[in-house]
Image 1 (tube, one colour):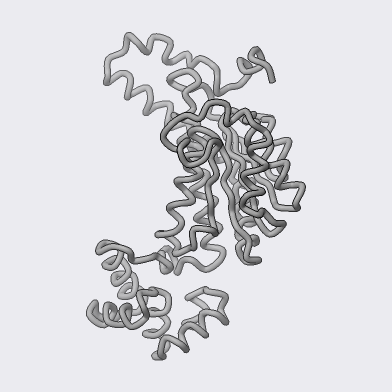
Image 2 (cartoon, rainbow, N blue to C red):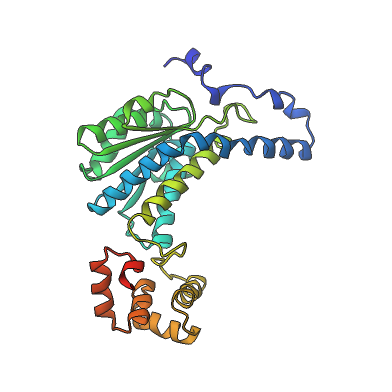
Length: 299
């Protein structure tokens, strides 16, 4: 795609509501941004079937011991890294289970790495470095839908038999043509023309929230809407863990805390131990038999 073609992208268009942005007051600016942001959920709604399909593919991958890779450049890459990082404390996953790869590597999280996003081979080599297999899933993220780094990653993923998903903010995007499942959330021109960290970034964050949450629910990382695989790595999360145990089992907080400690701070184990009146070893066996689903383990 040449420079002239970029003008055809909705993410590069000029928003008619903000052509006099530099003459607006701060209140007018934030008001029009708020109005534009309200269009994001509406743009996501038509894509829900594709998002659900993608989440199911990710969940099935996890059940096979596979991993999820988010791949992107710039804002898109950073959002992938963010969602991957949040899976560890929220769902108690190992860092390898969900990983975010950004063009240019870790330093690109805070500084632009010139030329990295235009390197098709780099997208492939980054996945090669992580020993991608057919059990894994790769989600390519690009607001423009044309980032070469993402195209290279998706093509390599397909070559090894991994599931591929494309997330963009333009219709009929290039990356959609390189993936089995396409998610195209068309939010329209940005308040600040071409600044896809705005509505496009918001849309991508919302979709990534859906993908990881729905996939984790699918492998037993929740009980109802409670995060029973939370890792209590600080005082707040320890208290949350105690509250979850109390909520599910009905015991008093002191018993919940004592059992949590006895269970080596595994909320799932503590819940099953209390509900089934068993020790941790037996609780872990129950959870193994139920595939990690607490609801089945305490029936």
